[in-house]
View 1: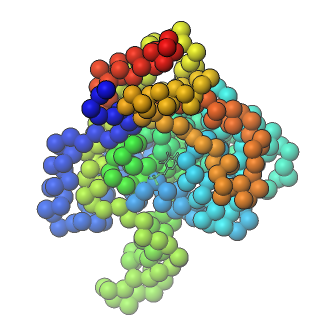
View 2: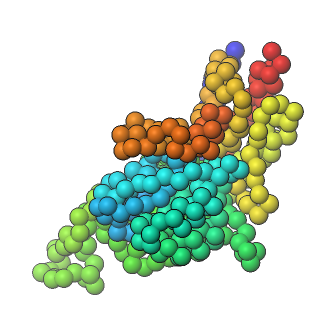
View 3: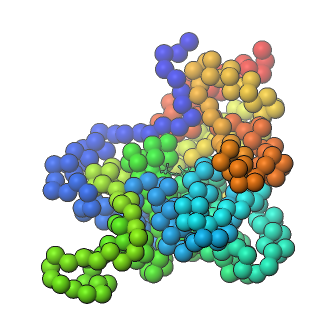
Length: 386
Ligand SMILES: *Cc1c(COP(=O)(O)O)cnc(C)c1O
């Protein structure tokens, strides 16, 4: 038996990261200082977006985005059941209504054929927007999604919490990186420790739309502005105005310092994740396991490496007994007790529900040691030849 367990995901903190945080702690700014501005600028550059807004976590990023897009009482918004609950909850925070759509059986993302079918059967104006999720790190086909959204007058809020650095080649062969917002209105990211970039808690929203950007900045700090250009009155140097009902969703400067330091290694981490995936792909051949299928024009961010197996519970338990903490992503959101109370039920989304019966996320993080991955592979093999 090994002395420590192998989790499905974990952060990597280097000496340089620690130095960056300590340096900021010794500076004059703990919140809303120069590191936040630097983090936003560098993150926007990384994604190829005009603007980035750093916030306290990914859920806050989703909530502010839904607010900026104007979600209100009765607005219907479409999302996938294969996600963390926050992707759906943000609509409810604003008084809107969530409508789920089943997933594609090949990539486990929102099924765009089903989405089109759903929209074509609705009267125009029924839905306001779509929240696609780049599940596991697989970027959604935002080009096709934009065409669909435009036909029905919908906005797109991309949940890319799994996919910083992922990209696809569009029909013209152009590289479309998640968060560039070439085809979407807003994109959100999370910096929770299991995600690619860790700041403890943290999140980011990217956009190219100046109006949305201004709203996000306003809503992030109580709906308060001090900007002379935006003030309705001005009584002097002390003066500020609360113009909208906002929140305190700020991130701290020392978290942003950690974010800047982590972002500088992001591409290295992605390359490592892709290497780990390749090794699993090869090592699991010949077993009753389905490994991820990635289309040619996709660069996958591999937040998760999800396999599908016939006997998931037994394999999960066996790995756990051997110190390997695999995980399941996701329990269908529409089957959470809260969403069931809203009328969703088993049988609503057969592809999602079947996927859930079989999926298992294996350890996947850049600091996963080669011998630890070998051990995981060995244990999976020994499970099947017992
Ligand atoms: C992690 C995650 C979130 C929420 O991010 P937090 O920073 O934990 O609030 C939202 N959506 C998806 C898909 C996530 O994986």
